[in-house]
Image 1 (cartoon, rainbow, N blue to C red):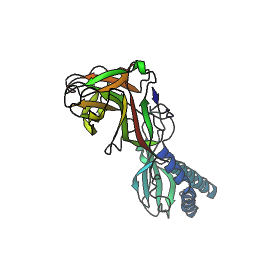
Image 2: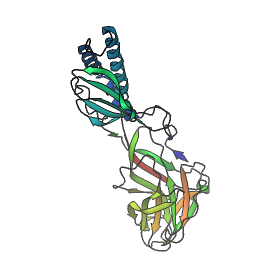
Image 3: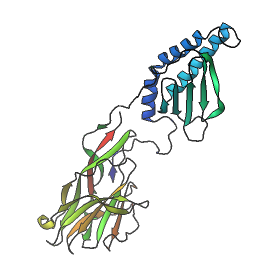
Image 4: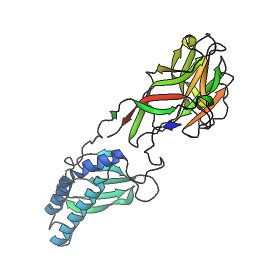
Length: 321
């Protein structure tokens, strides 16, 4: 069985930042000089007006405030408060609990301190610059959007085409007896969605009787088809012969699929002795699995990975640059 090569890492929680986080972080970093300048300006104007301390002490506090704000903004991934005098935003996990941290900076006006909190602590907020006369965050708080996603060209997403003709088996599609093949394509790590454009199946004549319907459905946790068809296409088997033939059907309503989703191709008939679907019993790839029903999808056999429908699935992948 051949499946598009998987270049993705494990889909557990990433140990590094996501792409969007990196885009935001890099963009924020590019404007940190403005942030530092604002903080240093506000602290410098307060020199000599603080409640004790030398000018050198005040300058050191200004540098510390600038460095803290710069470091936090560089990691910002989203904002819940964003005004000229206050900002509350999230940064990636810092304490090992797998949850993002919420950072808040605020200034109440001339003569008030610039304060800092992380996840609501300390309470009251810590003062990082005292007796601030002038402070405006408009220059450093702006909406930063990730670059637009890009849909790639059509490609082969998953396939099974066993080369040894003698190993090919026939599954007869009837009114209530259907085969199904579930699959999950290997996508790039920066994929945001995918779509199916066409599917090819290997079929042959059983009897010139009825119509075939190729359905695409979701799968349950066990890999069985579930729910109504996401899209479907029909094929008249009257043109088939007794030799195996690749038949292609197109789909137009299978876009925006979650990169983590597995789908199933189900072949149904509306008459007994509709057609034969080819499969083999030499499969070993767990990215695909085979199951059947004899009660029109009321129940399905346990999916197995050592059988596979002869199939090609083509589509497009949308990625975040």
